[in-house]
Image (tube, rainbow, N blue to C red; front, side, top):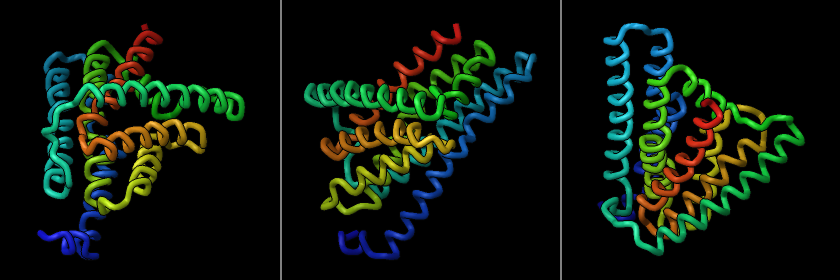
Length: 233
């Protein structure tokens, strides 16, 4: 497919529809259905079945996102992460964490809220039982970063924006990432998720390497998960 045809209105419209489907797939979170069901199960066999179902649903979602990215994306996913990339990842995480701390302080001051709805939901699922803790840690640290980077960085930025655009796809990616993770009217919680989305998008745009944004996303979620688990136990 030549570039002029790739960016024709009908082709672009089709890719927008695909992104919306991917967006709502993440927003609705069908992978969490087995987690909710686990809270009422005492049967070991049902626990095994629901645990397997959790992984199956996640794998299917990642597979759908990967196929979409592979078909419409502009960059190879096989690139390695270099030492320079790791330096960018660490710097981005530190800056994002500092901004998050400031926004959390502002949220406490103006809304008297220190925990977002998304984070509270994760904490509630983590606190159900030990099995859900294990499953959720897999989801939070490994599966979710891969899935969300394929959609919000890889597919969104490559399939819906021409390479000549630099800041517009970064801004749109951050805003949509914030909207997908914040369901409350607290503007500071939205900005917390949006700003990490900006950093993830910026790294992807700078490196054209989806593994870099996935690594930053995993690092961010790993540290957040450790903090949540410590609070629970």
